Amino acid sequence: MNFSDISHIFNRAWSKTFSKNKLLLMFGVLFFCGLLLVFFHSLALGAGNWMKKSLTFLPVFLCAGVLLAAGILLIRIYHDEIKEKPISYKTVLGKSWEIMAGASYFSVPIILVYLLLWMILGVFLLFEQLPGIGPVFGVLLAFGPFLINLAAILLCIANVAMLFFGAPAFALKGFSGSDVFRNILVKFKKDIFSGVVLGLISVIPFVAGFIILMMAVFMSGPECVPNKTQLFFTVRRFILMIPFVALLSPTVIFFFNFAAESHVLLMKKSK
Image (cartoon, rainbow, N blue to C red; front, side, top):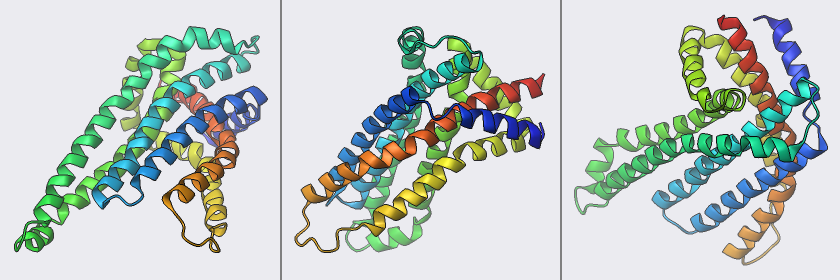
């Protein structure tokens, strides 16, 4: 693998990104994910720190399962585009439905692990609330919440890795893609550099777009609105979410296109 290979797959993945049908499909998926995020964030308003952490991370893991299913569909469509086959979204969806449903269950273990971490974090916070000795426990066991929060962040990274490596494996190999997925992870350990570089390239457009959009959101803060209520913040988030996910849709399509190209490139390299 060299710079020419990466440049070729990047340009080809980007050239197949701005399809009207794929943009509409991804907008619908991201809109649903955005509704989940807005709903959970509205519940987090006024909640304690322990509940806020759960309501912040949990929808992210739920959305990962939805995106994995959508990614399988997009990669199968992209495969037909590259092969210059006639594309019928209805036909591709009909052939991919079982694989999409089955693959989405791979996000369940991550959700269960996070819920376990969240409950353990609650135990640490409970110790801190003990009268008299609570602050002592809070100092001596400070490493506990730190490690739990670190683990939650690593689970988010694991979700991205699952989307990047898992979606093309399932899309191109069906349920046998689980074996391909494991083989890729084994080869990834032997050549971690190639996998990391390709993974980082795939998320650059999304991360750059997300940062720019978040800056625009913060600059558009409602400074002149008095007596802001929970309903106000929820409706505002919902309204802002619509153009937000619309503008991010191309970056997510590119992510899955590039993931498919990277999968094929890594498989060729491993032979």
